[in-house]
Amino acid sequence: MAAIITYTGYFFAYYAALIMFFHLLGLVSSKAAFVARSLAMYISILIASAYGLGAAVFLSLIGKRGLSQWAVGRCFKLCMLLGTGLKFDIEDPKNHLGTVRPAVFIGPHQTEVDLLMLGTMFPQYCSVTAKTQLKKIPFLGWFMTLSGAVFIDRKNSKDARQAMQGAGEQITKRKQSVYMFPEGTRSYTKEPTMLPFKKGAFHLAVQAQVPIVPVVVANYSHVYSLKDMVFKSGSVPCKVLDPIPTAGLTTADVDELAREIREVMLREMIALTEKARRKTVPLTVPAKQQNGVVKVSGTDMRVAA
Image 1 (spheres, one colour):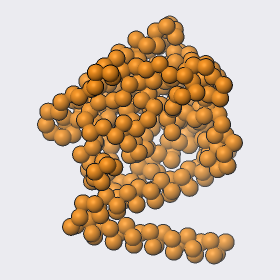
Image 2 (cartoon, rainbow, N blue to C red):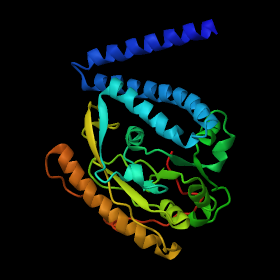
Image 3 (cartoon, rainbow, N blue to C red):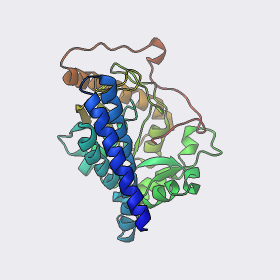
Image 4 (tube, one colour):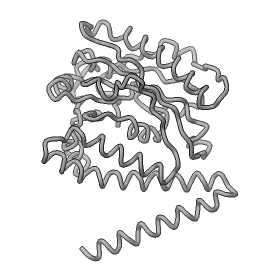
């Protein structure tokens, strides 16, 4: 045990020195600053993950496992602020994050930095969704189970609606909200737009008859861009919109529901981006994306991860 503690101490000391080295180089090279903050982000993920496993065990023992992912998120938020200087400013004037439960929260998926956005805005008793198959993976599956993740069975499903069977019951029975990225993958876009929405999140909300709460984030390619190797400190505005009820809706309403919500989110995303950049920005949406909703099988559907 003493050897493990010693080697762990050496690892963190060398890692911290490496980050400081690239931070110093960052004074003359933006690429070095990108490397320094990227290294800080990776170690923040490691620290938050280690903390999360212990937190999930403890909170499960006291009957509060629904708080596990919220606790991990707050730990990651603090580590990222100290290590990178990047933060998300959440605008939630009506306190929807604290009062609407259970619900399906959705938002744009721009880059891997969205993990920080989740860590900042994640409400209590909320979790990401995960494939049922992940339960079998050591450590990750244990943490997902202990932290109250909502599992979705996609193994033999034929469509998004069938893939959500059982997940809706988990939400209503446990009063556990979930967060999903309806785009299904990272967009890495430089302008305020979103990929077409897949319908899994909307089927889930309709099946559980719970509201959908859109969370809109400004396009932050000016502070983080993997392709351009840009990673700056600063703040990114994020706004929680009013919940959209799904009571009484059926699967026949899903396409229109997804289309309308996407349009509202796009308008708010443009406004937030203009606020963040302090200038007017154009809306550039390819013609093939105008409808903004795609049909997808349950097997191909991607959920928040």
